[in-house]
Image (cartoon, rainbow, N blue to C red; front, side, top):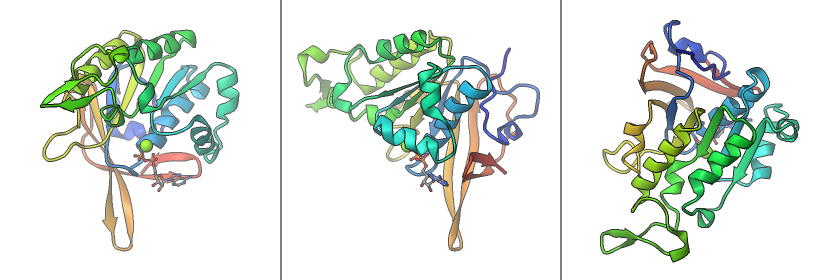
Length: 239
Ligand SMILES: Nc1ncnc2c1ncn2[C@@H]1O[C@H](COP(=O)(O)OP(=O)(O)O)[C@@H](O)[C@H]1O
Ligand SMILES: [Mg+2]
């Protein structure tokens, strides 16, 4: 089994040294807004391209391409050069652009640049796409021409994860907690994914701590425990 190197400083501390995250895994990056999911995943894509010769596709439903690029530049990551060299591809979409071809569009983009990494930012936003509207307890279609495989967001996400799994890439799916007791809003990604990395913040006097915990990771030897991390000028560092 080959493990993937995320390229995030100190990330190896979360494993006991024998088996990290298997290449080809589907991993949920889980946590409330502002906890660092986007920066974590951008670094995963950037480091993959510059340090490990693993091209990556970053799909954003949250932000415009230019904003994402300038966010990367804050950390000194020369993303524009990597885009030119076809080592990184950014796909930015509005929720209204999402249709049944969403998964295959990403799949084809991944094949084009021979991607080894894919990020979907985020699943939770995807569930809010207007292709899903509630109609007397059932989900139905807003636009007939936007028929998607699956009757509701959970099936759509289930299909998405399965299709992207066929790429053989290591995939990160970003998501926020659901209401009440559910782990996620879609109720399915936490079961389908091989792993869950939970990011959170906690108040400490007048400041706060950023925390990371792996709560599930198939076939990896996870050390267990909660680790503090920082976001500094160069990206993430696990303490
Ligand atoms: N250049 C930076 N240096 C330090 N911290 C930063 C920088 N840019 C963003 N942050 C911190 O990262 C947080 C946002 O992280 P982000 O990955 O966008 O969260 P999420 O995607 O989980 O909503 C911000 O709240 C901010 O505190
Ligand atoms: Mg984000």
